[in-house]
Image 1: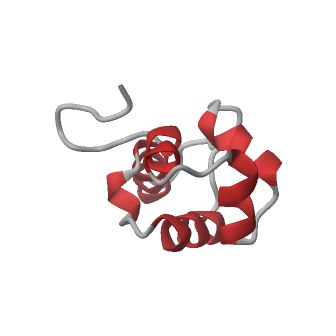
Image 2: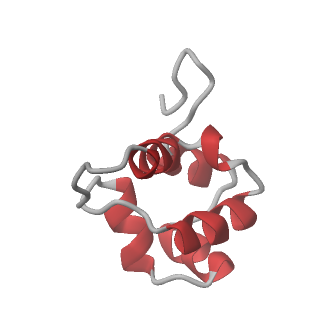
Length: 83
């Protein structure tokens, strides 16, 4: 659960793998708990500042987290609308 065949994991799986709650990860990253919740539930696309902070707190590369990889891919394609 959480890790795909290509080795990319969801934010929730990365957080759970480090035994962090939503609030614990948010505190470690310096973001609001709602930010973590919204990203995990697909409600919002993470901004680059949040991606950097969450990756640092989780000690992972952005491309290793599915939600972050998708956000970076979308940002790399000019002219597409974002959430």
